[in-house]
Length: 112
Image 1 (tube, one colour):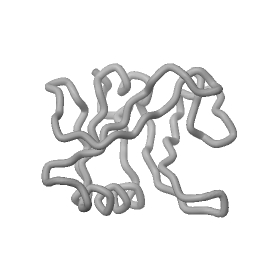
Image 2 (cartoon, one colour):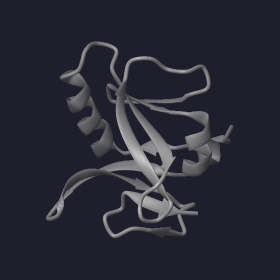
Image 3 (cartoon, helix red, strand yellow):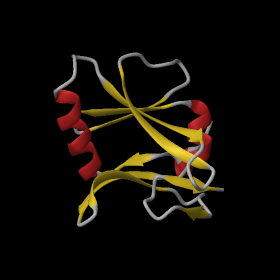
Image 4 (cartoon, one colour):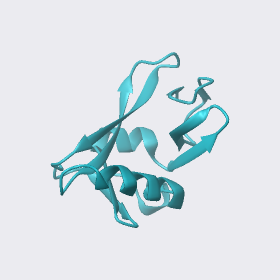
């Protein structure tokens, strides 16, 4: 598992938006963020609503929002911050990943 210095964090903006999304879901809903192969740069982030957590999930709770990240994805995301941006090209979650050596223009895929 990763150490405290390389843990994944959730920004205040992202926590607020996740909380808004989860309010419309059934009680106990959490946001799962994972890394999958694919996208134009090799890996991509996936966001899903989840109701169950695995024993080895990283659980991040902030401002009423709960984010789950599986142990394998945590290794790819160590040191990252999950943020929410609302700009001219749209509103979306962005992962600021210091391990990514390249990312696509839309920011949804990356390579290491």
